[in-house]
Every structure is written in structure tokens, then in C-alpha cells.
Length: 134
Length: 134
DNA sequence: TTTAAATGATACCATAACAGTATCATTTGT
DNA sequence: ACAAATGATACTGTTATGGTATCATTTAAA
Image 1 (cartoon, protein in one colour):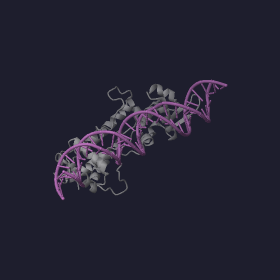
Image 2: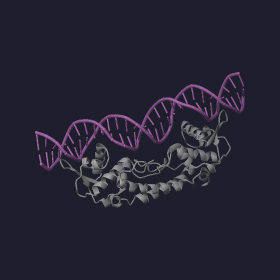
Image 3: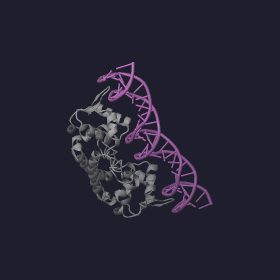
Image 4: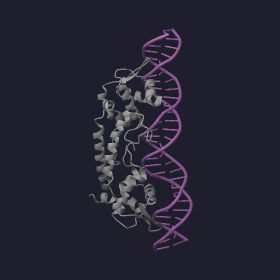
């Protein structure tokens, strides 16, 4: 049971790295040297981020990626949405439909509270924030 | 991303049902009629609970299952442990080893806070409690 | 203008978890 | 003897996760 999957995690690391070098174009090869992430996997991740408008890319020799916007405007939740879909700890199996079971539903209320708390904790997190800490 | 998997959920429902009929032996067939759960799946779940010492079973005609202890002593976490293993939202990929990435680790601290909160919310939940509500 | 370094686009793959199903053996009340 | 129940165990289909592999295209620089 993971709140953050590996691709989201790798994305965070890569973006933090790039945030420290704003406006500098960084290649995957470069990134891989610092972060210990498998090349082709990181490449796929960055391409996805590019398609999502979080990164900008530049092809050809000397090319690579850079942040498409200030690191303070890149939210952890953006990444979660891209790689993991909507953040939901619940996923009631009877969504929309009338929930047939009152007992489980009372449990669900508790899960909802937990989810709200988790969201409140993670919502404000941006790449800039993560870079700043320490 | 689910905090509670389907088998845990089904287990909760079945146990709540049985809690209302304490010391009465209930067969899978009976349970299936009330709760809308696939027979063979529920059967497997109850057998697992039996092996875990949460249920007692009685074979043969008129047999079935009943709670092995008072419903107030059966914790949601017992079930989670049986069906989902340890409750962890974190699963740092570099457990034990020195975490090589400070940035991600600062994120991890936030995840730990969330996990602690979730545990604090779920820890006190027993079957008795769930039955009592409403 | 060739070459090499980069991304773009896609397809593929292995493993595990999840959500069950199926079957045969054994027990037991009637 | 029979039928209703669990015990034990193996199997199956689908999806998510965590990647690899390949070929095409762009582009800076020799």
C-alpha cells in the first residue's frame, strides 16, 4: 500500500535536480549520473512530464529537459495525478450506487477523514518546497 | 490506492454479521444470502480467518463459523494484518539502507506523519464498534 | 554533410497483487 | 448412507507496477 509510486518518486527527484538549475537544459544522461535511476525508465518518465506540460524538451545534441514553469508552481499533486491518477484512498466499491452495507459505510467515513488529512498534508507541497528543505 | 482491500472489507462485513449473533454458528451459505459476496471467495476468507484464530469452525451438517472471541477484541487491524500484511503507507524503497536522497526523504517525513495519523484513526476500531454504530 | 547526441513515439515484457473459481477430501448430523 | 458443511489446495483472469527495447526524428558541431 503506497501513497507514492516509484515513477512519481523518481519524477520528484529529477524535478528537484532540475529546479536547482533553473533554465538550464539537462539531459537524461546527466540526470542518471546523479540520481540512481535506470536510464530508459527515467527517460519515459521525463517524456511523460513533457507531455503533461510540466517539462519542456529540446531535441538534438545538447538537448534535454527543463522545467516548464517555476518550481514553486509544480505541485506534488500534479505528479501524482500524472502517474497515479486521482488521489483516493477510498474507492468504495459501490460508488454512485447506493452503498448496500451500512457497517462498511461507517468504516468508510473514517477512511474519508484519513484521506482528507492526507490531502491537506500533501496539497501544499511543491518542488520548490522540497528543494528548499535542507 | 486503497487502504482496505476487498477481502478485508468482506471479512469486516461477515464478522459484523456474526457479531450480532454471538455464539451462534453461521454457515457460509447463510452469510452469502445476506451479504452479497461470491460464495467461494467468502469461504476462502472465512477459512483464512479461522486459521488466523479469529474464527472457530465446526464441520459437518449444521456446521459453520463463529467468532473465536468477543467482537470487542477483534480489531480491524487484525484483519488488515491477515489480508494485507503490515499497514504501511511508506515503503521507502531504500529501507534499512541509508536513503541516498535527501529530497525524497523530506517528503517521506510527511508520509510518515500521514501514516501515523491513519494508524491512530484505525487502531481503536473493533468489530463491536462497527456493529454498534447506527 | 556526415555523425553523434539527444528526444519522440511505441511496443513490449516480467512480476506481483488482486479478486476470485474449482475440486477433491474430510467431517458430522440425521 | 447421505447430504451439508468445512479443510486444503491449486488454478485462473485481470490489472498495476516497474521497467526494456527499438526505430524515427531532430539538431549541434566536426
